[in-house]
Amino acid sequence: MLLDIVVHVTFAKEQFTKGELLMHHYRRCSSISVPFQKVGIDLIGPITPASSSGCRFVLTLVDYATMYPEAVALRGISTQEVAEALCKIFS
Image 1 (tube, rainbow, N blue to C red):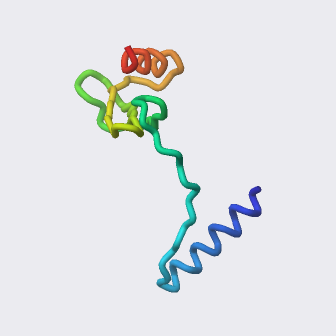
Image 2: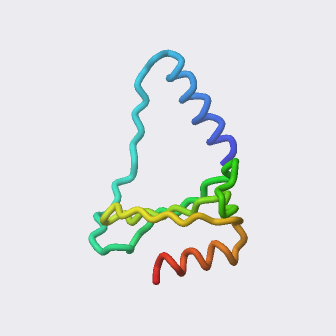
């Protein structure tokens, strides 16, 4: 798999330096019509300086059906903190 990644990145770099447009063939996704059936989650940080409350990370969530965004500021990214933030979002 590593070899496949190296070949892909090398090819993409060559195409980019030649000024050619990169065309990616993405797998078609089935339409999602039920809110929160599929979500995207990401952790951002560490952010410096920290906020006045000591938060250095942001947990983000986007619902793919409605594109509804949610963000929660976190002091740390331990399993416990992230799980509590997700429970807060979904409750």
